[in-house]
Amino acid sequence: MDSYEGAPTDVSFADPAFLANPWPALERLRREAPVFYSHTQGGWIITRHADVRAAYADRRLSAARINQLFRNIPQDVAERLTSVRLYTGINVNRLDGADHMRVRALMLRAFDAGVVRNLLGFIGQVVDDLLDECAQAGEFDFSKMVGARLPTTVMCRLFDLPPEYRPVLFDFASISTATTAAATVTPELLLRLEGAINDMNRVLNDKIREREQQPGTDLISTMVHARDGLNKLTHDELLAQLLALVVAGAETTAHTLATQLVMFDRHPALIERIRTEPEQAFALVTELLRYPGTVKCMTRYAAEDIDIGGQTIAKGDLVWIMNASANVDPEVFADPYTIDADRRNMREAMSFGPGLHFCVGHMLARTKLSEFFKRAYSRFDIEILQDQFEMVPSYIFYGYQSLRVRFTPRVTKAA
Image (cartoon, one colour):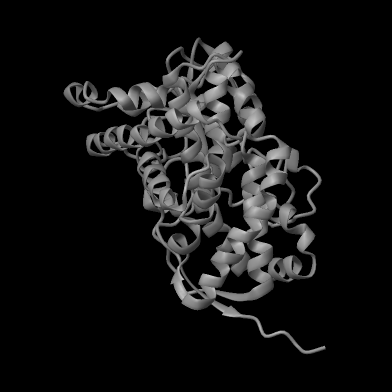
């Protein structure tokens, strides 16, 4: 389908080399074939910043991509995945048009700046409590001690759930992303997700009934009220959005905490800056969300024939929109692999998926990250205890399976 003479070598998102370092292959595509049909991935890979931005804004590229999960899945297995098809298919990230705007309007109110400000003190306390445990442990797996706990503890607060639900939320988020973002989706992964959705829905339905009788100010109460209000969410839509919030609130931040910690370790000047100018923490984590970032790409289906970058993408074709490439495009970002918190063009970053599907929780995510790093580096010298990393096998997320670290309390000089 591609028309390039001497087209570059195809890429596999499941290749361990690509998982560890996707940028050389993406640079080659951006330079030689910025809109490239990948036979390995079964779709078009878009790498140039201008094309990525245009693709996110183009309504002819549909977010209704649930069928992507079922490619190459046996029919008898697909017929058993009723909950996967329903609840994954109607979450806000996979809706188009009026349905998308109706649900998104509710989500924006749930995550406005006021909500984040009200959570700031709580987030700081959660971080301090976790850092106390880090001090006691000394050496530990950062992904388990911090990544698995900080975002889900905040999510429990948002949902007004007791602390014992924290591992329940994280386990569901991990199973969900291990499946929906897998570089290679298998029947086993999908069947595991089917069970996880049903289990999580039983928990959520109990809480929905409670909030119907005694509504509060938590996120579940807000969504329950909207179900019967102007937004007219159905019960299944309500469940789908709550499931999506659990996944987005947990897994993405968990991966980002680990990859940004490694970047701080590799760039001591960043540590010095966050210690001497803690007010710059928000700008620093925002820059690190550009590169190396966490969300490598998102997918869309062409709802009709469309021309991008001189290539005709046919109706029904799958499109891979590569955030990780756009975020290091030298046409937009000078010295793109240099971490510079003072960049003047950060609005150009694709970190949170610009356009109609811009991440509604971006302020909360950056607040959790900035609060953690400014408090952690104020209290500790942090050492990464491994040179090699096993990457998560995901086409979406850039992240590590585990991260061994040592936290040593800093010795401050007496005045």
